[in-house]
Length: 115
Image (cartoon, rainbow, N blue to C red):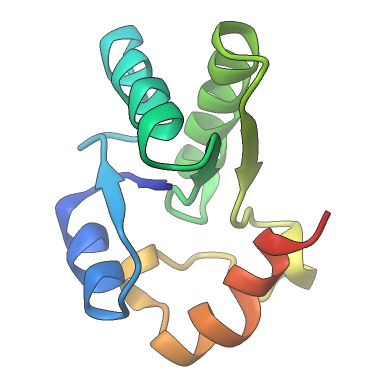
């Protein structure tokens, strides 16, 4: 289950055949996190992948969300799809809606499956 910031990100990922949910912000609320946890347990095979915008506010929001999920649902597998520093900085400054289907399927999604 991929969690993104906005509806355009959801639409772009859906176009690439990847389901996602948007929090419509770069900060997740307690209510939203409870719903994402429920979705992850019921439909997401116990996994949450955060793909907030790959810039300062997105990284900050993802850090907060990662901490919140780790405290609220330690039984879930919560990961970052990317950050400004991950993947050699290749995606710094990008938004999920700007990533091509090729980049998603050949680079980002396989990296999530590792480990």
